[in-house]
Length: 150
Ligand SMILES: [Zn+2]
Image 1 (cartoon, protein in one colour):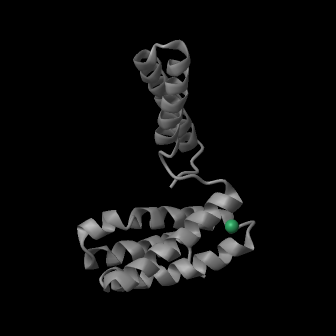
Image 2 (image 1 turned 90 degrees about the vertical axis):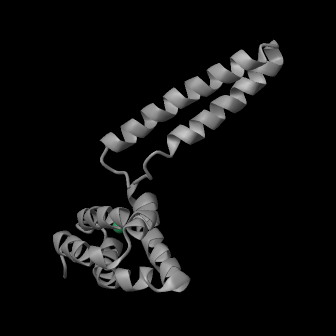
């Protein structure tokens, strides 16, 4: 059984085999982060124990996948989304920065409605967006502070 540190070492060792932009674009950092989270949760979760050995596997093969055109790339993204969705649904992890765009749009919608009712359309839309943005940002910061974001 590989430890998270061993898996992250393997990921780092293969890093030079893929393009730098692919490393960012395919969120290999997210993969490494999930390795830590899955190891932590595997203490109490049998599914995470399974995922961890799958991750050890993927750590060895991800450069080949990402350099292998769209088939390999899609497979990498699917494997990564299996990890992130299990962490999200079973253990309450969240994607970083999801609240800000959501609440900004929500604020805009509420502001537009209030604007139609009151006749102060622009002021209401602008304040709705600003309030939504502030709430969204603070929720994002709170999520980061819990240490459960990827
Ligand atoms: Zn789990």
